[in-house]
Figure (cartoon, one colour):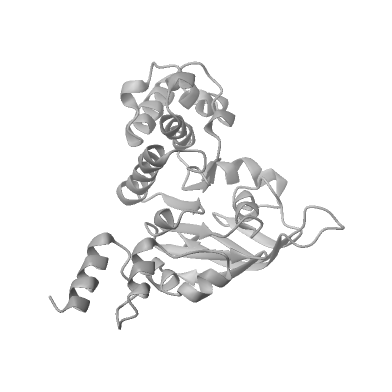
Length: 274
């Protein structure tokens, strides 16, 4: 069952500009992990902002949990259904203590204190930040801050979490922290994840990869299906994961669907006749 659906979605930022999104039709299944790739200007972040009604369509429709995002009276319910995490965690952190920041949205929802306490504890545990509950956010690393921002969204108990390049400002260690938390949320809680990214290795962890180009969907499939199309990716100014590129360089009859290091090694052993 689709939790998010776009039908002929188009969007332009101003009347004189071109279309940032042009006839996008996608359906995202509940419980899935979808990565959206594309170079700068491809429309991927614009698409993300439509998934919880930060932006509204210029044409076509977006449905979140069956609700049309253009219906103003549904806005609160839509944002309860699909929570958003942005690139810079500093833009989402509003309190001086971690647990108070995570509680902020719940307090605005008017939840009773006992329920807020339970939700905050559960959200911090889900992202592995329980021991930092009483810490000051500004003293945390970038990866820890982003996990706090994710916890703040999780405390609202959304059915979908939309992440717009959440690791773009992080070092490799911070990126790994955030991706581990995201993957765990999807696998252990069944939360639907939509990840906007430009990192191929992050997209490879998803169930599905959508590649945007010029406001349209250029490729859509499993990571293995998408990343095996190396020439097509290069024509879109993207590259495949290093494992796939290595196998292609061997110029042998090897599967380009080997994404992990282990799968790549198996293919190379096969090539060497070992």
